[in-house]
Length: 343
Ligand SMILES: *Cc1c(COP(=O)(O)O)cnc(C)c1O
Image (cartoon, rainbow, N blue to C red; front, side):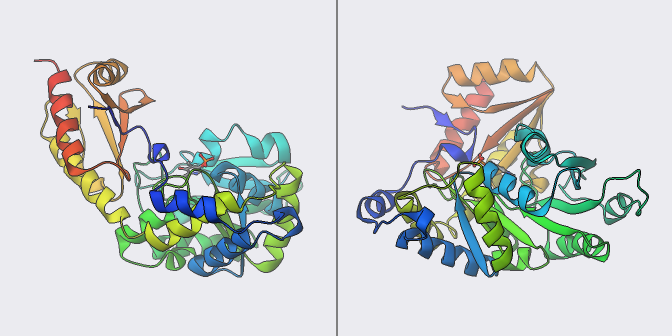
């Protein structure tokens, strides 16, 4: 029996249909705008997110960087969550490459930014202060356990930003997980934001790629920035082809991952020495606090028995369900955790 890998939904492998689409994809030079498969994927993505245009990039990190470079100049300020992926997990790219000044606001446990806290970041035109150009949100929220922001929560933050003349960017790496959890369209979650990105290479199971979506003018400027950071790919249709398959066939099945995560969380919360609140598990991420032994030691024990989890520091482990993980794997995973707990 192989190991059960719940470290991340990025470990997913492409479906047979994706492999086939990659082999058969019509190709051209995308830097010349001539790859028909990339062009089709960009059009589909823009439509799904309710924006005028889209740009295919190598990764979620590249979409975020290109977006920040397009919204902000050197010395401009961006407001973002203290637990956001951009602030914590992207090597400080916006600061290193764009001179963008980050201002963090504490994320709520549910991954939101309180509108009052965002409001307080706009300090006025005094020459001591960097101008705030951008407010960033994240949906679903990775470090907040896959938490979901509602359209109303997004609108409330966007209203503050827009009232002060700042733009709003949504890091929607897992926005389809949020849409499936809420039973709405992804475009309902992106309506109030100026630009949004999503990943193909997570729950949608593609080998690589992300889409940045926004107005025609924004995407035209983003296209230059993508070239600047070395993200102009040539026959990128081989990577765009599985993205088309993903948008057509892999979105609705995310509900299975969410159900598996709920079953996992329910099973874990019955075990002594672990703290899990199944009510907070709304998508495919299960955050666990380990109270009976060091979390890193539990992770090592699990790994030895064939269950892989991510250690997030402190007492925290993370388990992520995804394509390729079946209900039987969840049952086995729970059995392995039981065997690894003391007593
Ligand atoms: C994974 C992730 C990214 C970055 O995506 P990569 O493709 O790994 O670069 C950005 N934001 C969030 C919220 C993510 O979960």
